[in-house]
Image (cartoon, rainbow, N blue to C red; front, side, top):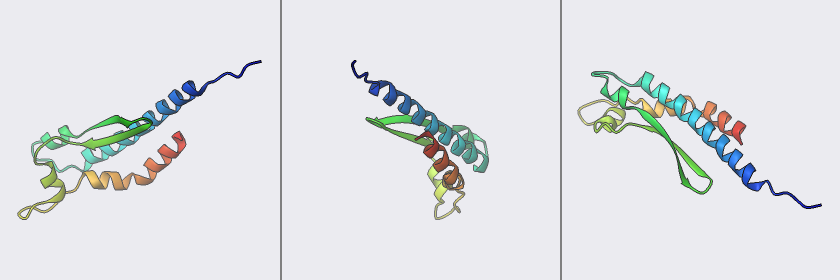
Length: 106
């Protein structure tokens, strides 16, 4: 009687679960960031997006952000404009929920 190796199948299932959990987390943060985002023309809010990428073997990263050039000035403020944070508060507000989702996936 031989021993069957299911390692690859298990690794793939774990990877899939982790990716799904990270995707769920970034969608939660993105939604809150869009709700918190100050609106003038709506360009900044519409540009907020997410991605989940593999950065190394078994290492995934979720990102929420924007490519609008003035986004850091809105988030952090300038010497002429007060900060109007929307990204960091979205992450902080959901930190416990994110931890719960990731723990459940593992």
